[in-house]
Length: 159
Image 1 (tube, rainbow, N blue to C red):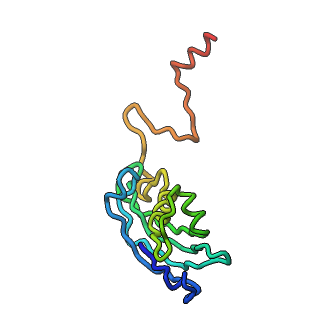
Image 2: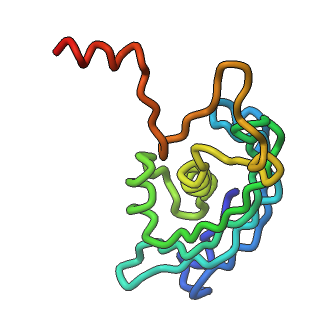
């Protein structure tokens, strides 16, 4: 997502408006736990501050599809991410080297890193919340409840 900064750098415009949609290819989503991210809306402005640093004020919104942690069915997970700061600060956060951005700027690496930070560790679909999570000789123990293993409790008696 390359933004032309020529008019901004030459002081012909005081800001550059960004209003774009982007869909991430499947190759980018490998090893992220996300099935798809389509129609990500990026809108906002790019300006120059008093010392001619590029400042971004963007809002990234969309919906990512993530498999349910229980049923593995796809779950839509909406997100909205504000991105604000100077270009140098934002590139430093993502450890990206600043390339020559005199006349154009690729904001996709900044957007991608911020989306990666928003991916939840676990998503449960609405229809999976009422599923009984037990079977013949087993049941799911959540972090809220602890069950003491009777075999291990016998070891405590020895000490």
